[in-house]
Length: 167
Image 1 (tube, rainbow, N blue to C red):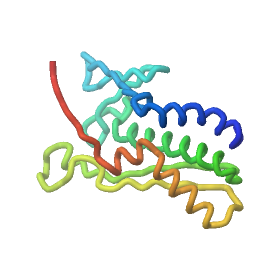
Image 2: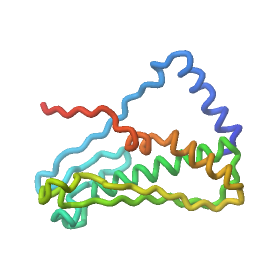
Image 3: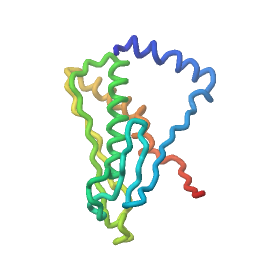
């Protein structure tokens, strides 16, 4: 897809959202069911069933997906798609590109071993390996716009309001 095709695809959507902001508000959903045989949650992805379980550092077998890994994978997926869309819109000459995310966890927090140890990632690093001859100024612009428009990055960066309930 080139910049013209991307613009043609997105222009009617942008116009509709400018005309009626309510059309831009969409609720995404995820659903999972707890496994009755092990400490795992079966998440429906729309394409397959992903079974998430405990990380080996918390006693898991390592056979199930770790939700921390899934969070990083969601960040990589969103940042990669966003980078590609921005590069296309900017007519940025991009060859191969690899997106990597890594994050540091202290499992003492997750296991309740140390109250001063945080539960969750202490730090997440997102890295792009870009094959391009573009000048640094354009690379910086590409990264800035990717960061700005990546839904997962912005969600992690700007904590949304969260609610928890049980029926």
